[in-house]
Length: 152
Image: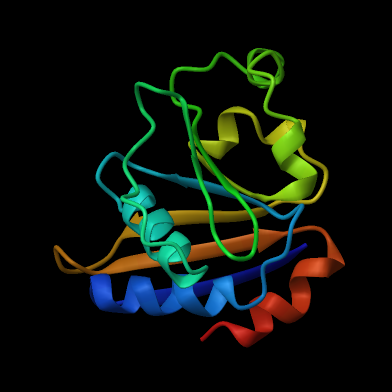
């Protein structure tokens, strides 16, 4: 298991990390985002989608459960798993076509994490100030090791 902690001071730092991560993403990648309410999961996703080349308005999929954003690097599937009861309910959403052809970003990913074999998990925690955050990036698949090493 590979783990990295990154302390960020503000939203600009969050956007910089999301952009740096975007440089390494490819179709089939899955990112599981976790953290308390208002920790910045949707903000992180918005910055990631923008870094992947889309100008679409990224909004929280809390009520729609899933949003899809088109980017030059393929579709980004943005799911909010907060209201899902587990991986089985996630499976029944019928979104599996996007798992191979696009990049999946799952907010509240720990609720359905067992569904994926090789995700990158990112926990967003609150830092010492209102705008500071601590990102804990964790992966068990070697695919993510050079990605985590490249993020600073």
